[in-house]
Length: 121
Image 1 (cartoon, rainbow, N blue to C red):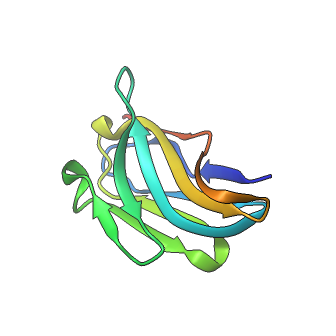
Image 2: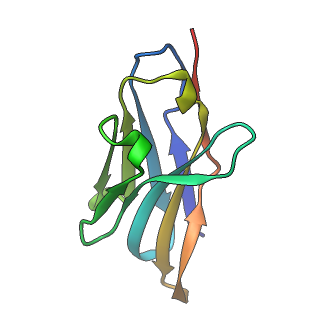
């Protein structure tokens, strides 16, 4: 069974830095998109940084310059580094991965459980 697991969140002070990790494991034949979303309290979930296997990268305008997405295809892992954290970054950060498995010919997206980022003094 495929599992997607985020880690690296926590409580940090404004101005700090976090690096979030998302690792996919299990019956994986191939991966294309590996994307980061956030859901702030009382708000809808929204994409903040996306990647494709071919190397395409996109950021939401509000996070350009502070968020950096990278991936290690050999490890089925994607990272999100957040610099200069501010209170408005407080949210649950989710990883969404498009995966094809050995047992299923269809590409499907898999969500992690989310990791909480809280920015407060």
